[in-house]
Image (cartoon, rainbow, N blue to C red; front, side, top):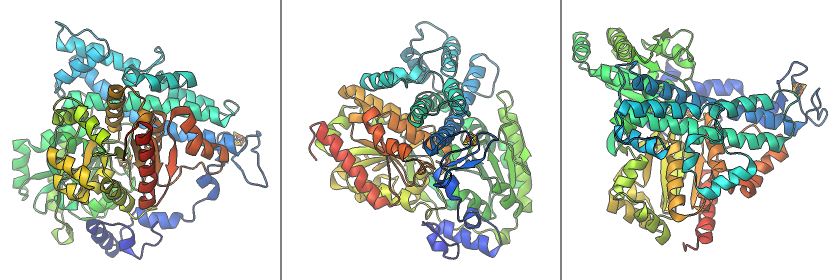
Length: 625
Ligand code: SF4
Ligand code: MSK
């Protein structure tokens, strides 16, 4: 892990990041790395999860000298409660995003907006049929209304299971039933977690954590899955296409606008607005040669997957993108947006615009987006960006690198298309060992690591071992910048995977989308398991989040494990103060749901651990290596 700010090369593996860190240093601009140093050393009680602030008899901190809180809670109870609430934050983030997608879809279905439309009606009809909604001879908007109501039920308390539990292989579902963790409704499971972790309620750590599994399953198989499916229905199901990545996607002679956050509802309208001929003409009037749109984090992933819009960077590149001095405006929706962006923007001419009432930033301008005014507001924001172009100090502009090409757009539908409409060729490749297994590498950056070192090296190490890698979220940018998201990267893969990639003209690392799109990985895993008549936990699959930081990443890891996917994390959550909780996470869960977590900061050792697990699963299925 990077310890000192002086050695800039130790902070990030990327040339564009290093150059911008040097520029920030020269220009006296503080970044996340500086603030990490100021925060160190971190509090040991907080780090190990044994600090309780759940009631005002405390706060209580557990140590050898004082092993119980004022109420009598021990380290196990306190750690489990804290972790339960941590997971609830992640589940709420994804799922509230999912709810916003339902509201947009609902508005379309009921004719309350002209700005949003159904782009993939074939997918909508297919999902409606899958969920038992009648479609024959019905008007598309009637079907849409029923589907939106059906999805809303997955958030409430009236159902015994969320709609997409239907997709879960039967063996897995039985395990969930035996354990009492079939997810009922997103809001219900999150509320119950908050209730259980109130003082004097659920005081049995394993019991609290079992509910954590249920709540995270509600996120994966409902909140996130609904967000993904409805985003496809509204904005189009991704297909393979090319794009570009790194800070080099910014243009010196154009108005640069960055979209940041998670939900495509805002960024899709910005994309429409930047193509408006009147606004392009206005940009030219102000001296720019055009308007350039680029993405950050998961909103960037959403636009890149569907529309091929380039990405400027991932989580730790967001401040550094502004440091280029070339960004007129950064427009955000929610999640993973550092509050510091407002201050960094003020050191240049960069304006920050917020759009969601639930995610406002002091010092930023708020332009509220709703279903009825999306395009109008988007045009207003693009105009603001253009007006700032003349304020740019070109002498301070430094765009540090040339963009790297990548391939994106591997939705489940696109993968099936590539395979000729059936999973059989993929299954045959797995059986023959040409693809020994698959690993979803997902999630974030964290300044405690050298930026993207683990993300990149774990990906490289796995493809060398003929293991197909799927990326989502911020790892996508790492893989893209490393040149791994193009078919030519097959030469970095083991010889068998290389041959598969060459035959299909695909990269050995497939980009499947944003944070919520990890639901695509769940769906693909379920399809494979159903085809083979086994449980997801029997498949040679794994997941990893090497440089994670967010509550959402922990929630993703937990729903992956609960769904039967062995999951690697680069560092543990704040649970190390309870041996009971650690044992359950690293081992006990394997007996319960057929998968568990493993922790390993070194990407090469992590690859070895994942490989071993994949080999075990192959052998159990009677497959050779
Ligand atoms: Fe302390 Fe118990 Fe209150 Fe937590 S719930 S702060 S351990 S008294
Ligand atoms: S944006 S949760 S830093 S992947 Fe989804 Fe990136 Fe992690 Fe946020």
